[in-house]
Image (tube, rainbow, N blue to C red; front, side, top):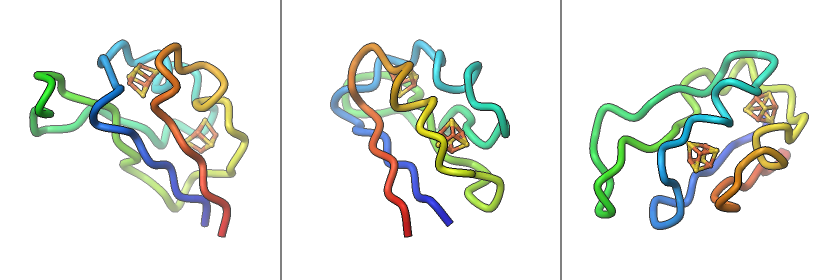
Length: 68
Ligand code: SF4
Ligand code: SF4
């Protein structure tokens, strides 16, 4: 299944990626990053279809979608 990585040094917790994901597989982290944000995380990787909408939407280029 596709893996979505969120760069902890880039994510500003705007959550645009969460709102755009058609499969609702992204969520908010329960832990705070070094930059002070509850970053986005891939909560349900089993639902990810690798469409890269999250990657396209992210204004901070924090997302990488890795296909398996
Ligand atoms: S769109 Fe980018 S900056 Fe915004 S929450 Fe998602 S990963 Fe973080
Ligand atoms: S690649 Fe598509 S399905 Fe997977 S997390 Fe990003 S927006 Fe959601």
